[in-house]
Image (cartoon, rainbow, N blue to C red; front, side, top):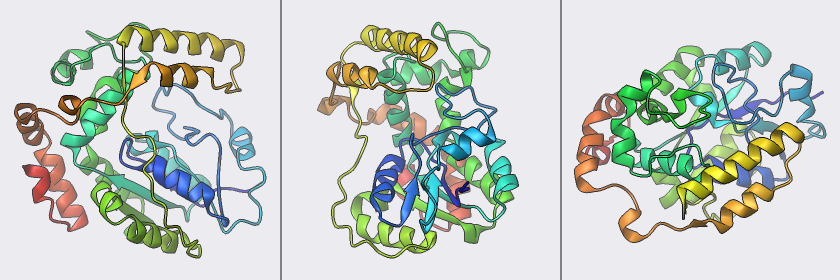
Length: 295
């Protein structure tokens, strides 16, 4: 059986889906399906875990023999405290790809994803953000919440702390950082550097259409209804995806209107202040000027 040699560990809503798609299309790379097995993040109650034993996990990589690089892309690993050490126990020479983004921008996308999946019932980001102190205490959470930490958006977006924890376990030479801004402006350069890091030849890709662009539900109630149906399906057919939920969800979603994109100037000021410590950590750890993230 083939063991992966690199992991794209997040962070969520920072470009990991695009990288996963591009890597999957590379003739010398094997990326498992599903994109996010979530096997190593045992401290997080994820919505779906594709493997519960090591043998089950390895079976996700059946057919990977002969490829130059083998990987997966579970974004839950970036905020997990046990995932990276557990990966290193199985693969001591593991390499990691970590995508980064302005947390004051990222939080809107994470909140939107939670709405879209039917897990969040508070449509307004400011209200959801300000509910965090109560949610830390297990209050003001939606029904059937699996893990209250999913609603602590400031923790999910604490990228400085997450990168610091990664560097405590892994030599920096085995970590490739991808900034969302670079992915938008210079995707070809980012792709070339990523291929070099993984150890695969350049496939000459010139099409860099973003994947998993942000959408929002037309109705929070409908989104939660789809989630309830998927829970029933998972109980009846736990290991098989039939795709109906995704089809229905796409029908019930729409692109955000201009006024719904990003956050208001007032809320951004609040978020920039809140995440200032995390941005300081990132600036120190990466040596990159992140002045734009403080505006």
